[in-house]
Structure formats: C-alpha cells, structure tokens
Image 1 (cartoon, rainbow, N blue to C red):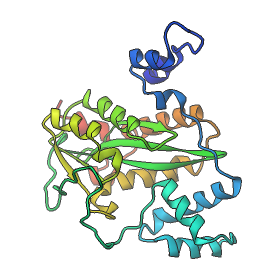
Image 2: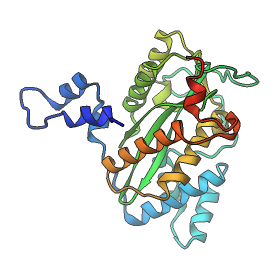
Image 3: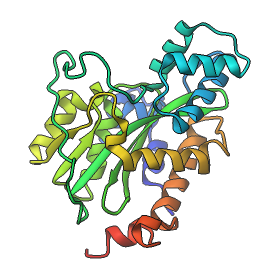
Image 4: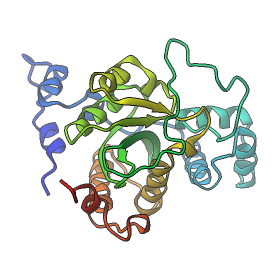
Length: 279
C-alpha cells in the first residue's frame, strides 16, 4: 500500500535554499512536527521508569504520583517522588479520580460540557474522539494523536510529534475532516484541544464540542481501548529505534486495526467494513 505522507515527506529538499523547509512543508501539506519528528531524549534510567509507568497506567489508570512512586520503588528504582511527578507530566499521564477545583477552567480557554453521557451511538460520524498518548522507544519517546469514530471504531487519522504542541493535533483533525464530518467531537481538556486553533476548526464545520470531565479518561473509553490494543499488540513487542521506524510501524498497525482486526463489539467485523457499509 502506498504511504502518501511518507512520499510527500521524502519530496522535501533540506538544501533547497530558495524555498525554506517550513514553506516546503506547507506546500506539501506536512506539519513541521511531522517532518522533524525524532525521539525525545531522557536518561536510560528515566526511559526504563517511564516504560514501567506507561504499562502500569494501562492496568491502573487511577494511580496518582504517590502510588506510582511506590510501584517504581518496588521495581527497584529508588527515586524520589519529585522525579515521578515530572515524568508523569512529561508523559501526559493523569490519574483518574476527582480532584479539588475540578470545575476550574484552564486559563484563557473555554471548557465545553461532556455531551456523550447516556447518548445512544447508532451511526458513523455521529461521534468522533481524539486523544494523545506517550509512545516509548528504545532511546527516547514520541507522542501520538489519533481520531476514532465511536460507532465503527475506525481510526480516521493519526500523527506523531516530539512535542505536545497543538500543531500535530490540528493536522490530524484536518486529515480526518477530509473523510467526513461528525456531529460531535470529544476530547479531554488538554490545551491542545481547548486552544483556538483546534476549536475553531470544529466550529467552522458546525461540529458540537464535547470534553471529558477533568481527570476522567474513562469518558473517552473507546480511544483508551485503542491505546491499550496498540501498545500491547505493537509498541511493547517491537520497540522502535527511530521516528521513521515508528511511523512505518504505526502505519502498518493502523492498517491492520482498521482492515483485519475483528472486534467482538462489532459482531466480529473489522472497523472498515462497518464504517463504509452504508457508503
């Protein structure tokens, strides 16, 4: 299968002085984060600790810094809780439990209500959701964002980045909107999704914005299940060494997930068959 993103990426000529790399990326429809992706550096010990915390978080997403600190110490890494808190923030992990000031909005950003409680999902493009996850690698890590259709479980788009800025999230949204338009778009309250660049895309397409309750990743349950499947079926088994290797591995995995992986909740059909059944 042809990889259109990688084909466009290879067209960029870094030594072409008359047209900057930024301009070339813009002309080819590639984000700068997509072109420059490379694993973020951390010490080997910290990378091991982050990998352990990532696996544990999938099992116990209610673990806060104190419990995660106890777990890491039990694994033989005698580090202080200050380091654990820093690494959890770096990974974008937050325990699922009510916290003080739970209704406090992020400074400068509007927070939208959660619209999916009790909602019956009966059709494709009724609800899409998006989230970001940490991807451990052999000598670093990257971040992955994906957008999934709740009804069909079809992964509509995804991007990777070496930073948590909003660019790669907006790029993924633009990619998904080329395939359709949902009635509701659900995310967490992260700044990547509450910022004007992301919300304006949704508003301009008359898409209702829904956001999880603070500290309630379970509100975005289907994409959380996607992360679990992705990590246990690909990432933890095949730790990539480079951003390019990760890109191709994710490309292959999402093709498998959409086209070959049978879902019990879909009556043992694959997501693509359900998503395009009535098209």
